Image 1: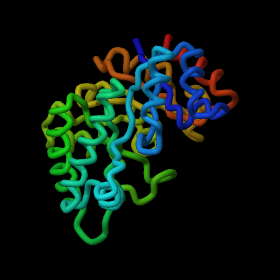
Image 2 (image 1 turned 60 degrees about the vertical axis):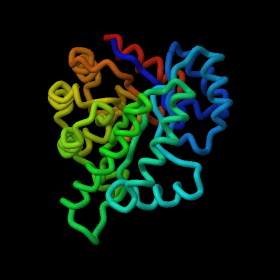
Image 3 (image 1 turned 60 degrees about the horizontal axis):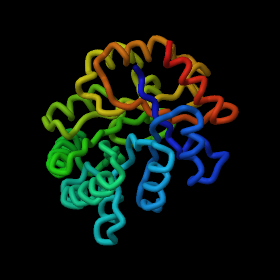
Image 4 (image 1 turned 90 degrees about the horizontal axis):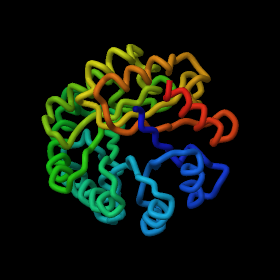
Length: 264
């Protein structure tokens, strides 16, 4: 069974942020997710989750610490001198995750650099994730590294290939570090969706979905989501599948269409 969550940064924007929890629940969902926690009132988020009986599937690693946040935001994972800041941001974020009952933290590695080789950047990312993974494991959460497409949305980003991403996860060799497989980004980058999901399900810690082109709900573009959902369901993957798309029409209608597609 596919467990869908709604990214309430992109969905239910018809409502103020604090009302999007109720809107997700009204659609029959059991989970939500968002991007950064630093700009949220964590206490209010906790209240809304409890009030509506929702889980939080994932959010991004970040920091409110004025000594950590600038370094983490600037250096990300490819700069070896930023590893300590990353590990501290993981600890801070994991403590927030624990308070909200969230088990998954999303990590982006940052832009490619032109001052060191790609191989050095790859190595630095592995080292950073080992350090962050140690903290995450200690606090009972999983870090998920996200490849992004560089053709349309994230030009200059270091990691676009899921193959390299899976390789990094294998090199890190920690149960607390996996990959975020974003179907939208990977369709643009490389395709071969079903084979990659089935082959690497044991390395996937979270999934995002949207159709191509346009980043709208499944069924609006070129991806055969009926087959993709079937592949996810038979792969052994048991995590959440996050709806991270800009809806065509009302959010509630787009979510219900996706729920119906996932059931078949």
